[in-house]
Length: 291
Length: 330
Image (tube, rainbow over all chains, first blue to last red; front, side, top):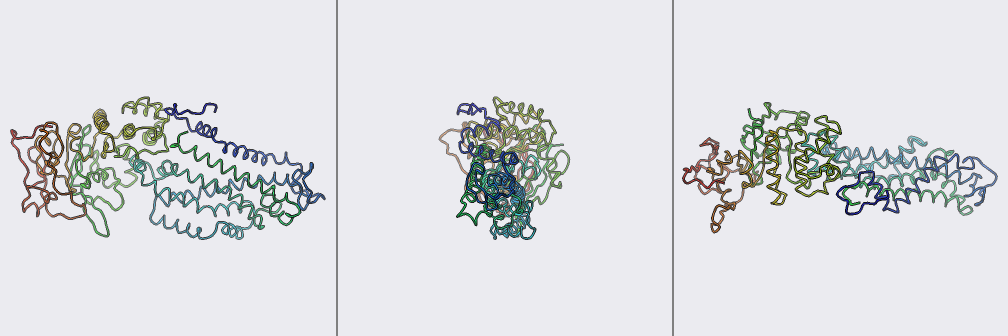
């Protein structure tokens, strides 16, 4: 990673991995984003070691301010806020990534198929997407949770289904342009199957806008979970998540500002760092861009 | 038995519920290691004929009659899967636009080896070794390095060389080249053409060279078929065609190309008029509205191709020259 490519050695382009590295070396925002995200990931993984208290353990020190014992204060039930945020990292990050992964796989598949095959397949898929498009994402998530009940898995499925339409639309529009490209014809001339043409030749060309959408969606998913929890439709009340902490604290925000600020700050930092990482990935994966 | 024998091929298009015939009664054949040039203007049906051979006519277009016999079997009746098995490994194609025919996000190495690994079942290592050999053969320096590069790092001529390497990768016995040099600099055109025809000859690969430039085919093709308005109007060996063109359209094409062996003060004579709209019906010979020798009969009856002194010509009034008046050999 020490040698950043100079314009002179463009004749020997770096391999994919070193390309990731060399773009990272030049991208301060991505470095910061990656550092913050790794920090949060570690915090989530080692929450039981880092947290001084059980996140659900109540003490009589209710709504205590910032102190050595409770660095981020305590909430209305006397629970240690730092411990709750540390444990909450697990759920919030998991929801953020799992939802987007699910939405991405389903949405991109639908979009690729609709765009490439056209005809009635396209009609059926896109009318469904239009239907979904007609409702705000959040309403769909609320509806799904209301139908299937609360709980971690249901929240993930609900939020990801709500995001499917965005991915499908982007993938379809990219596919519609890409399938007219001559290199797709060239792939057909070589006798590659449709699935292979789609996955190996069409999809990689559509990756840039999908990555942008994915990073934005991770943020939305974390916020979505927070909103659902805030409404009492999220994961169960014993699981501390950032959204739940915010929701619980909202009634006391005038007396205990830390209950709003710290979970909010955690959400903001993660969302911001994911966006930076997304920008970096988009640049790094676009081979047409000079490193 | 020829490698590829196209007999009485007819291609129709469905437009607004009506069926129009775009290619009529086209017959041509290619032997292994031999080059056939199909020459014609845009819309003459030359690319369509090639696409029909490889089974990639776009939607709405269809083979309406005739047969395409490749290596002894009729391939017009094959289903998609059987066609897919044929493509790449038996019949391959080189496109007109090297700038857009390579996938921008895949490395050269990936694009060359993909077909080999899939169709020939080569291992990663064997495919790479073959890719290096192929790149060397098409005249690309430092092939091992090039494999790691992406299309945008190569020039147009280099990309077309890569396309040739990809077309050759799965050891096909027939290559269709659809105007392979149109998008290239003039200086590169000759290199690419001679490279393509030399490689095809060396490997015993049949080559169908589709072009609108009659001038370039003389050196590289053994046989030439001239298409006009969806019909093959004249077919002969390249030498014969240049020596004594018999169809008035062929003659018009040849006299509209500047030549070094004709005095410079003799003006070029273009063919008057424009080629017909492929969807428009022209009775009789499709060339008769532009033909100086046209008679009443030309506007009524379609001339059937007939053999005449080594030529196959579809014309009611073919030009038959005696040797002493023959045009100077190209």
